[in-house]
Image 1 (cartoon, rainbow, N blue to C red):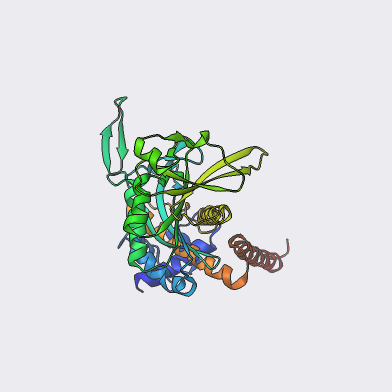
Image 2: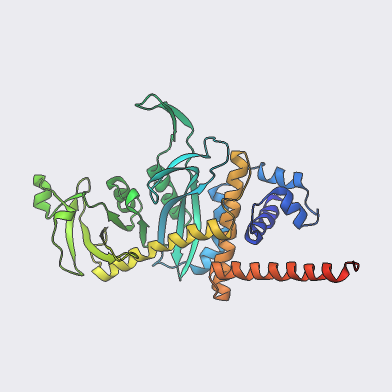
Length: 356
């Protein structure tokens, strides 16, 4: 049995599982058709890469691609609080919680088109270098920056001929360097949020004279855009202020910019709304495809488990399009089927037991 066949089986196991996923568990599920050792050799053998992921998803992408598609770049952390630390499983700052967590920090390139969302590339943030911090403590850091990973993922998407109109990302990737890369190197447009303290010039003349003001000091007419000039960029941007209400009733403000100067307010905010599909992507990986449930102790084992989870997500997304069920609805169907089997087996035990 080759690696691709084993990957297919293992990813189905991750989709079917409701607890910890182990080589022994999969072997028992298959009644020993695959031994524990075979599964271990697969997990710790050749390390799967982003190119392997593209090979798995390419056919599906070709079926749903469109020139108006969007490419989202975002990262998340697969938490591993009880696992031994190494260059891959280590401490990372989690922007969503505002604290450091232990786990695997991975960056995804996710393609959105025709109401489908598919991962087309990934990078792992490996902290493979030690340094002495200002407080004298030895800490880990990565030799490769997240911005380098960001640009590599975008470049590979272009090489793979994935058609997309806009690059979407959160504020952590909204640097002038990344903006220039998207426009000048890839010849694409972007929609990104900016921090409130970023400074812009209100005209080409103001930019030339170095007259910049903070974005949050500007006055915006509702549902309108304005042209601004950001420090470090040779081209103009369209800027909008989006005011929204949070779940707790509080009001939030989002400042959005794009290199496409023809966008209206509704188009700009509508394109950025597509970026939020990355949130259910990360949630489904963790809750439906057993991303965080591998006990593998090696870097290769953890990497291959992550790739298998990405493959499992792809399967769920394709099933969603076919069945009109959400990822969680599909998982609930599997859970109900497992419960029915367990219940039937228990009833069989009761009826086959000798009388007391």
